[in-house]
Length: 452
Ligand SMILES: [Zn+2]
Image 1 (cartoon, helix red, strand yellow):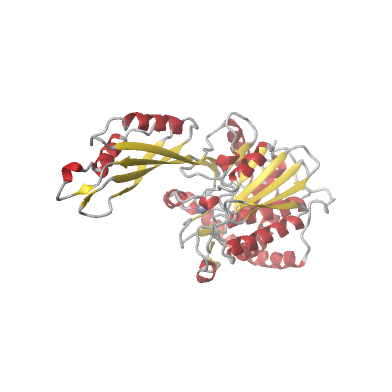
Image 2 (cartoon, helix red, strand yellow; image 1 turned 135 degrees about the vertical axis):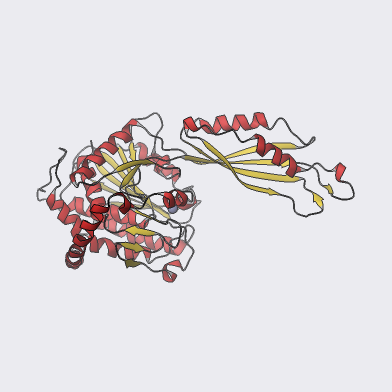
């Protein structure tokens, strides 16, 4: 997720605070399960992984009919995968793959591509130009008609060397390390869920397409088009950014940056100030006039976040600029805000100055919509099988779900936030919640089994 997520996640309640009773009962259970999971993990390492094409035996799952109680065989399978899950996570976190780091991104892409091939997928690697690194796309063919896209990014915000400075570690019920939850944990959920689905002989889909991109943290400039193009071919898109609690994300904001530049005239601040035209003063005037651009009913916010003016203390500045962060849910809002600003800046305070506005669209919104609401209800039914709560939350940040969502079309239905539960994103405190891993896997595999 891109930077603003940090704030949102930091404010979100800790998952355990929601239900203290569940915490105490599940933490003693998880010690026993932990020991079992280690054994199961060893067995998993020794056995070849199942591929979708290799598995023929009928599975004991309940298929498309919504169950009201948990599928116990699947509960056991998800719990038994904890150790394998952690080993996958450890291997991914051990490789630095900050946006722009060619070597690390290549190594992670190779690892992900190999895993997809072992699942029986046809795999392509496409350069994410102008970003560094490849987009890994895998396709698994089934026998049904639904087309499903599972996607998440594998770049992180961390510098080279971070993985050895701050290696993957487990402490209590948490895993730590660079990218552990944003979003390498999401990549592992995809891989583990597909392995489990293969074990269970889930075949009722035309294609499951998996997309791992290397540039989400810098705006997905090299992968946005492919995400949008692939998404248009799907019935359902599931995105695996992290979730701050037992939740899925039903909406994210669109983001645009507005840059207001003022041109004035430079002059000596002591000798001839009257011949100058102070761009900083004009900018300050305009920013005060531009305080009413938001629209809370539409979920639009505009905040002036960066101001620059002047080089020297004794010179009347001839240039000044300010940048605002615009968040929106309605795709028409950037045009409205732009028109409003262009109207307001026609009234200057400092004569002979000119103000101009530039708008850079960063990400389209993923707004609340009926197709997503239906997926949310389905996810909540599945969480109910495990007696767990599942919130549907709208977030103020932007993700690649915005590129997948197709305004005005009921397809694909998009759901975000299916990755690992955790917090501290983009910080050294980043953590993934281990207790919730089996439930997340259960949710994703059951979604794959029951998608309409
Ligand atoms: Zn992020």
